[in-house]
Length: 330
Ligand SMILES: [Zn+2]
Image (cartoon, rainbow, N blue to C red; front, side):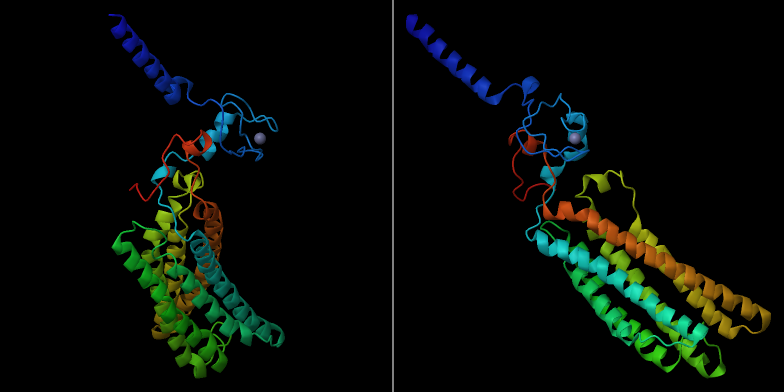
């Protein structure tokens, strides 16, 4: 009897120990045992109670937890080469915007020539914009497979998009590097001699729009995967459909160029109206495209923190209660 009692006592004690070690869910780690910067001022809240406030700015610790902890952090695939992917995404976005800005500079030089007869030396812009496009394409290459577990279809699409930068850079060079040096764009100088060149330019530009549309559609699936890493972008706290905005502006430019071709066929006043509408659409579309590319750069910048580091999990802040992600998840 006494033996049994002792036995029970021992097992009871053991059970008690296990209980303490596991900690019941109700009292689970009320103090932050990991680093957690305050959502408002960035003060490290480590060691504070979840019921407290930030000693610096008074924001509730719970508010910071809601803002910073990603409930899906442990499902998110780790990126084996975070710096390469981060640099790739930035090169991709920056290259595209740079090429657009250099093209504006080239157009600006034509305006300056027309208005004041002053010729800017923009020869460097021509090849620099081609280099910027190729840098953007190299960046896009890193988007093909930034981490494991990406569907083959996505990888193939992203590779097509990256490869499409070569024909895009070629077409761009034919427009700004070849046609532009023979005769300025038709918007700035009208005449029978350049009419044929103007039509060539329109076809080249339409081809460029087509290539860009393919790129946007092919890169979008993987970009969405990367954006899904960010709690803020995923949950729509920053609502952005930048890729669609870029696609829409490409469509506006393409419509303008198509109307330019139509204006070449139509004669008389209808032809003139079509020509003016074409110029208007190309100008507005190009402006929107540049703004869209700037938006992509902003989005890429926002993505950097979640590319370089895994998002914060509850376990990071409450003492490793959650398992580390080891290639699991979906
Ligand atoms: Zn604070």
